[in-house]
Amino acid sequence: MSGSYERPWPTRTRYAVLLVDDDRDMLDTLTATLEDFHDVVATTEPGVALTYIAEREFQVVIADWMMPSMDGIEFFRRVSRIGRPTTCLLISGRIEALGSEVSREDRKMLGLLAKPFSEKQLLERVEQLGRLATMKQTVERMRGTG
Image (cartoon, rainbow, N blue to C red; front, side, top):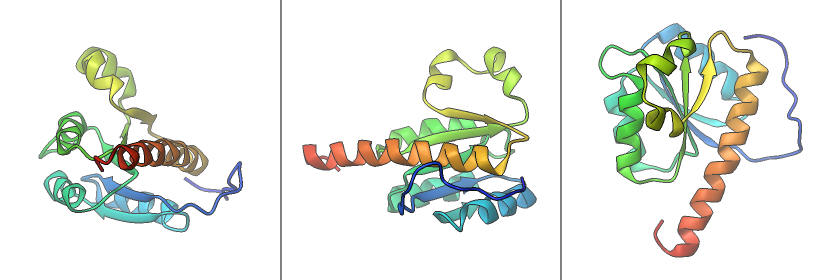
């Protein structure tokens, strides 16, 4: 991921983004890419990430699909059970395998981004998902449930 990124629309919104990847180098790269634009929390442990989600609001949660302690699909299932309105982005170098290895229902709960991806692709996707999560969170507050 290299090059400079200019937002395609003017915004000053910094979204809370949680990164989960067992590959420390990838986690550091994702953090470096996002931290100039967003508030980033990163961990290599899905269990720790679930604790973070229970304790605070994130607009975007990004996780790798293949992690040893818990795969990204199971992680996002557990995120959805916590009940906080957030958006999920699954990153993987094996996107083509999702069709045969992951149910259609599970694929519908998240966004997907295939590795390798550019800095621009990541930042644009986070912006899109951040706006969507903010709308979900606003609706929850208006209903008095959030």
